[in-house]
Amino acid sequence: MSMLRTIKPKNARVKRALEKREPQIEEGDKTAIFVRGNSTSERVRLAMQDLYALKRPHAISFSRKNDIHPFEDASSLEFFSGKNDASLFLTGLHSKKRPHDLIFTRMFDGKVLDMIELGIEEIKSIKEFESPKSSVGARPLVVFHSDLFDTHPTYQLLKSILLDFFGGKAVSEVPVTAVEHVISITAGPLASSSSASDSASLPHVHFRVYTMKALPSGGGKPRAELVEMGPSLDLSVRRVQEANEDTWKMATKRPKVAKKDVEKGLGKKRKNIETDEMGDKVGRIHLEKQDLGKLQSRKVKAFKTGKGSAKVQED
Amino acid sequence: MDVSQDLADYAAKHSSNLLARPQPADVDLGYLAAFDTTPTDAELYSSSRDSHLRDLALASVSTLLNSLFALPKTSSPLGPVVRPPAPTTVLPREKPLPKPKPPTKWERFAKEKGISHVKKDKVVWDEEKQDWVKRWGRGGKNKEAEDQWLHEVKGGDNADHDPAATARAERKARIAKNTAQQNANLASASSSKEARKAELNRSMLISKTSTASLGKFDKKIEGEPKARGVKRKFDGVVEHDWKDEKAKALDVLRGVESGEKRKVKGTAREEGAVNVRKAVRGLGRDGPGNDRGVKGKGKKGRR
Image (cartoon, rainbow over the protein chains, first blue to last red):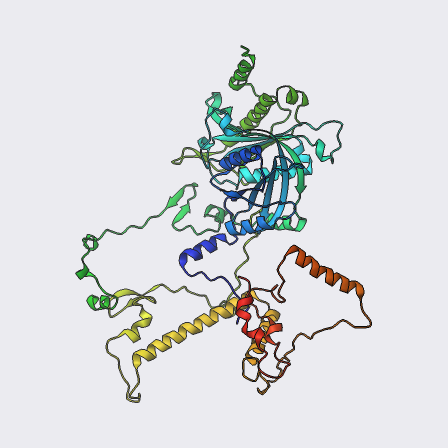
């Protein structure tokens, strides 16, 4: 009996699926799981529903309640992460101590990397705004306002998590006219009397989503018009769990990729597609002349070749 | 009807005047993000929050769009496309960087000898058929010897010699050899030398206990590891650590209270590993009846 027991794929489909889950040089969009705790409030449900709509198609919504308290025990999140190959979580909870609670969790290598807990102070859902909505899968612009996102460690973490959640992976190509909406995140002014470490006095964070219409203006410079699309969330910052320093280091390691490889599809196999000196993508397609003699006509049993007889006929 | 608010909103929406910022927002085009690091204006924030938030967003968005449109555009079916530079903000990866695949034994040998490997084609040219045939698989070239309709029998062969069966057996042996080599490569790639040694020791102990006499009359090999079971240890009757005993008893009680399942010793191991304690349990005792541990193995492992 061998100690070694790797899961050996039984067919090519499973093999491909397993290979897709293995670590890649260039990663795709992170999938987010939206999961409710045992008790939730109307606000939490609305917020999760709307944020799920924003995050789609890279999102999985769990329909059942789960006994989850990420700050106390994250084992179920780790389990879900492994099962679904997802690395972002939004957990919705509601309790007397922490009403209308949203917990953003980020995973690395199947383990919790960092977490931040936000309370919903006010919410206006998408449905309450009568405005055009962005289409599913459209990539938003993400803008942050306030010096806190640059200086305060909690807000830095919040910025990082929200950008990861809604900004997603780095883009290599953007169709400029395809930008449809903007996610704007603003922190309120820091109250002058408060000390920075007191979590009760941390200013609220305002999450707003606008649809954008680029208007023509002089000089070829675009002018945008913003219409609020929703959801509109006013959030208070609660508990925070920062990443372990070593894990963070591991997680932010960059692969060494040559520029040539970047243009050639970043370590992924891209057959017959090249980028020429002018930066244009050139594809090569091989076509054979169609042989009409092999055209499939009516199938009759008498024409069928058995397993053994195929060779005989060829001879 | 008070429409002043609506009018103000309309004016704000349609005015081309952007909110004046002391410094423009930092732009990270790779993530299509902008960061305005000016502190939020407390007065505007408290008096007209929503319109102020929109003004802020508008200001950053126009900065972002300006730098996006400043990039060289190429045409595509989706309209003009820009290629933003790599992002400057550091966001964590989802999974660690892929580890380089450890070389197989052949690859190590080839590197040492300077042999460059040429990948074999899946098809080979068949001179007789004047066509490309598969190297392996259904109707493959490797089955040529066993599939031919007439076999040559040499003079020295036995009367019951079956050339087709022999060819097939040879092919199967080659497959088995290759599989064994693959497994050996996998094993050497995944486990350290010590782990492999421990594994071999374990396999040996199991094979020893697999005879009727539990290995008592087997020939000893030189350097053979001694089969050691786990010795039972008892607490002293006189010199006794009472705190320890109390803790143990409380532990049992806690287990009963919480209803947690009794943890079977030796389950906290890698799945599929051999439980040595059980494997050698019967060794020290006389009589072959004490092999319960070995027998029941298949059922205990958690799935």
